[in-house]
Amino acid sequence: SFEGDYFTSHGAIVDPKPTRKPRPFLVNAGSSPTGIDFAAKQCDWLFCLGDLRTVRSAADMLEERADAYRRKVESFTFAWLLIADSDAEAEAIYQDIVAEVDEEATDTFLLRGMQGSQSGRTGRTASDIERTFQIPEGVSLRQALGEEQYLATAIGLGGKHIIGGPATVAEQLRELHVAGRQRGIMLSFFDYFDGLTRLQRDVLPILRQMGIRQ
Image (cartoon, rainbow, N blue to C red; front, side, top):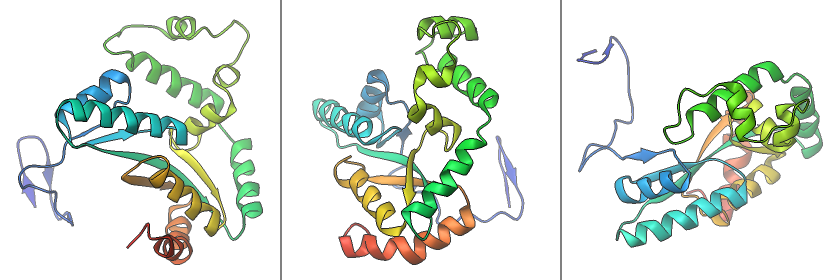
């Protein structure tokens, strides 16, 4: 049990414990140029979202800025996994999910995120945001952003979608690590129980063979 100034927890278990020496790791999740510079100067890790090209660009910029501060900062990203027995089966499941996307909820989430992520520019309405991002009247947010970017938020909250059989999933994780220069990847799943089972049973052995996972 723990009783502190900010939170109280009874009967909870935390393991492994947070790193305390010399201090906890500091992580920044802002991947704008300003956010990357802040991470390079003040943090240990940068957490960034996007496709392979986007996260590679963030990692390259992070290294450049960290070098200027004579520091070493690692880049991490986030991926949403859908693992099935085959690529075709995984794609069929994914299309069923896409068909059920709640556009109203997704639009609200995106617009609120845009409103709160403009480096201190607060108090802006949804209409203000739409004008800033030049969304024409009569065009949906889904159409304006494009299917890939829109679905990345609607399904997986911005994480890169990795969909397929075990070999395909392993290869795309390898690409994020090697070509994307990501030190680590936080994973999310459509079905956590099934996804974690398949990850451990089918994907991790392939990653070990690749030398990615020890």
